[in-house]
Image 1: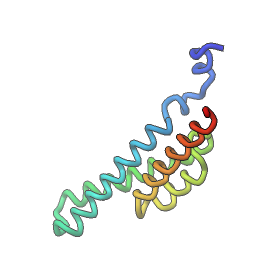
Image 2 (image 1 turned 180 degrees about the horizontal axis):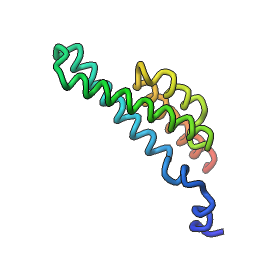
Image 3 (image 1 turned 30 degrees about the vertical axis):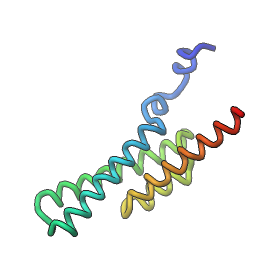
Length: 116
């Protein structure tokens, strides 16, 4: 079976939503959240920057939660990572980013072990 035939059978979701894309969005979300914390606690809560960053954090968290739950169902990411993003991501998106980094390293070790 050729690569194009395999890609044709792959669900659209898994062609669009990949592990790497979720990882990058998680890191972007962590940057937004860090900016929100700095803005709110270090810079004295300037508006409208704090509002925009807070709204961005909330909307990205909702989107990431729903997407990661679906991604776990399609086996793009493990369930533990989806739970980490969905449950802990609202309060600390850094946990999701740490989870993605951990899973990337685990996959690299597994790939190296199977190739050896």
